[in-house]
Image (cartoon, rainbow, N blue to C red; front, side):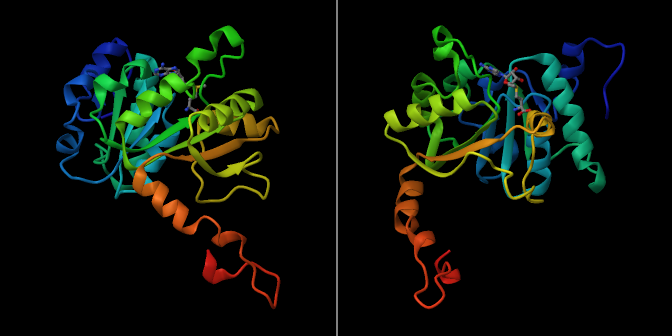
Length: 249
Ligand SMILES: C[S@@+](CC[C@H](N)C(=O)[O-])C[C@H]1O[C@@H](n2cnc3c(N)ncnc32)[C@H](O)[C@@H]1O
């Protein structure tokens, strides 16, 4: 069901009720019911044209995904991407993916406390002027909201090309008292890992030779306990070889 052509964008979205959610606040506390299972819910805030969330849903069928953007046209383009991603399996409606039209400002109206397990922020608008800092999606006023909707395994995975947004974000996470890990200033330094799912912006910036910055932020209590139990293991070296002990990964 590829819906294109003369129809208006909103009309097109209204016809894709199997995939597109135009009234996400109606599903607050009911997303698992909508998916028909209790699998973890991972959300991308600001999915753009939807390549990342579409590919993630196809590759990780044990996770439920929700891609959110505030523009009709981007949700429509993401719906095309999502259906194309699942084409190899002859699946018209991705079973573990919903695309929702919403403003991230309003996510407390969209998700119940603890309803989400992971938030992806990919190439969020950098808002470079300091007078616009409050609009950055990693500003503490957004972290307040993310903390509310994340569950005990909750994490935020953030990547950006913008050095200034990355710097601002690391400070924001630190000042908020959040644990960060797997920080990279050049995610693709050693070449592109096939497992890594790229976003449209990531491909564009890499094509220009720009470095991609990435950090994982651990928020949920259980996630933090698990992290604390293993955080120094990767630094332990075997005495004989001086190499990292593979048992300690
Ligand atoms: C720079 S694009 C990145 C798109 C995509 N994540 C990628 O990496 O290719 C940022 C996206 O975030 C969306 N966005 C920005 N602020 C938002 C907000 N407050 N609520 C919902 N979407 C937002 C924009 O519409 C845009 O699609």
